[in-house]
Image (cartoon, rainbow, N blue to C red; front, side, top):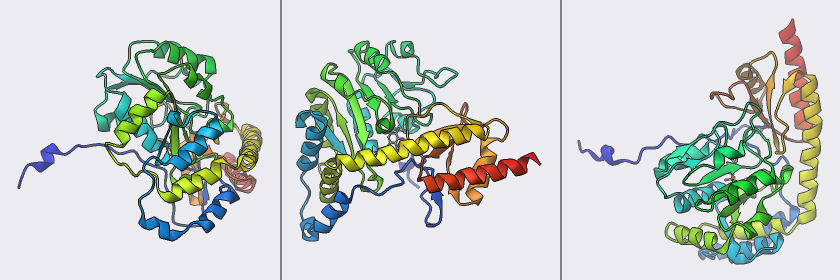
Length: 355
Ligand code: PMP
């Protein structure tokens, strides 16, 4: 037997939420959009010539980059695209976090950050959110090798103040600061305008949530031309053809349909606000979510028990058995009908529990 296993890069992978094969499940566990993508996407798919797939796609994904640049009012040189924002974030970790000093991200946050840090051998430190799950800006105004956090945060749904984000970008001129805005469209204020002023600020967004294209895998980053050039240099040293022809065509059609986007986001946020009130009445509490999910705990019944009971009924939510958050459920905001099923289940279950 050889010793090759000694030289394996060992990592503990990120655990994504379950994608059940059963169709009759109410799926509130991975923060997808409960509505289909813009009908313009279906039109673009119908018009797509499959014969084109024999050719490699544009390595620059120019069609998509230009559509995004024009939508967000920036130059194409300020836009980087990837296979979901996970790809964009991974590339950003690889490109920008090389000082050898610990990077900073909150103790309660998107759990992929620590996986990329481990994969790339980046040291990291996780300042604790305060007892209301808020970031303390002073925790990020200390020496560091880079900073990354979601806004709104996941899984709490809490939005940071733009003034705090600006203070963090301004106070760290020697580090790249990444704001992961996967959920920003559901009610937080984007840091995009700040990228004009702070060369070290990278804003990352995704088509997976508010644009209902999780299955197509499209993410993007906007920042200074310099940041984007470095990201592209790393990407072109890794995999030139990240964005498929279909992804480019669908992404462009999607981003150009602003009325549909607004309508979808409007429906989801209206449902969220209604569900918040109903959950409160049922004895749940939660940080005030600006995202498409609610991070709720019940005053009496442990989250793990509710999670299993829901699962038994074919209602999937996310439960994280981790310190500080193992008494919470992360519930994606689905359609009104899906949320009514969830609420009806809670009403019934909590009634029975009391007996
Ligand atoms: N950032 C955060 C905070 C997320 O919750 C997710 C979704 N799991 C992502 C990034 C990645 O999403 P995607 O790769 O689908 O763009």
